[in-house]
Amino acid sequence: MLRIAPSLLSADFGGIAEAVGEVASEADWLHVDVMDGHFVPNLTIGPPVVESLRRHSGLFFDCHLMMTNPGDYLEAFARAGADGCTVHVEVGDTTALLEQTRRLGMRAGVALNPDTPYEQVASLLGSADLVLCMTVFPGFGGQSFMAEVLPKIAQVRAGLDEMGSSAELEVDGGIDEETAPLVVRAGARVLVAGSAIFGDERPWEAARRIRVAAEKALPGATVDS
Ligand code: DX5
Ligand code: ZN
Image (tube, rainbow, N blue to C red):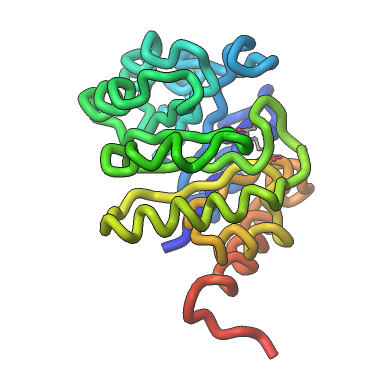
């Protein structure tokens, strides 16, 4: 199963609910980028916005916490209506954070920066519902896809398959029609896209094009002649 997760970061923050409504029927999840101005040099949104948006959308809210102290905010995100929260392995204490996330009734994800090796998450695969491989350095939308992360995506895929895990493998950063097939071939199944969707004049069509390109790269898909 392939999931397209438009990233709010590139939406018009003055009209988020409307922007989400435009892509909703072509979105499987909504990716919510939370930046604390510390783990990454940028500030975005927090639980109050998630809570407001919850009243406008029934989509799965996939919250990507680019924060140094995510543990201090997990409960607030759960109360606001987040469905899943992903913490970065680079902040440490990941096992406890994943447990805390699950205890709060959310899907627990772990993210890795492009230069963080697979070995740092290998032992966590069994306790995560989602592994997020960043294909740009987090902090900003609209950056170029880093193809050098592809082998690590394949490593995570192999690790999950070996243990029979059904955890999601998500990628985030520079995903568009061109790069989507590459990450799907490497084993990713949840594709986050910000600027390629909300930067387009017709976000719904843009999401659709990414899905079509990605589906063609799935194992067993019929290849166009
Ligand atoms: C980057 C964020 C991404 C961002 C991706 O720090 O985690 O979710 O929105 O944006 P694009 O798709 O434009 O690279
Ligand atoms: Zn993100």
